[in-house]
Length: 125
Image (cartoon, rainbow, N blue to C red; front, side):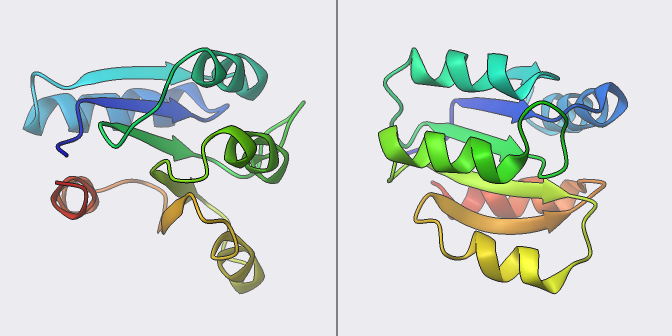
């Protein structure tokens, strides 16, 4: 199923802006929503019935709720959802830990690139 909506959860507004800009530049019709507060992002995602037309980009290092806490709650309701970690973390243990979540489809380093976006969207078609 083709991706129709991307939700970005990252406490860094410039990163969210860059992601949205790059996604819309190459996929103008894409519905993109971003949240700088992970609690609000999680509440929004919990209010929806997610299928394979949704994609989530998640940062790991955030205040109030880190990416691991987010993943623990998110995966309970959405074990088959498509989520990519998008982080500045260079810790190889983070990538190993992310692989233990069934909803995590990949691990990307910031900043996101055009190639990353194309790869993600092609994988999820």
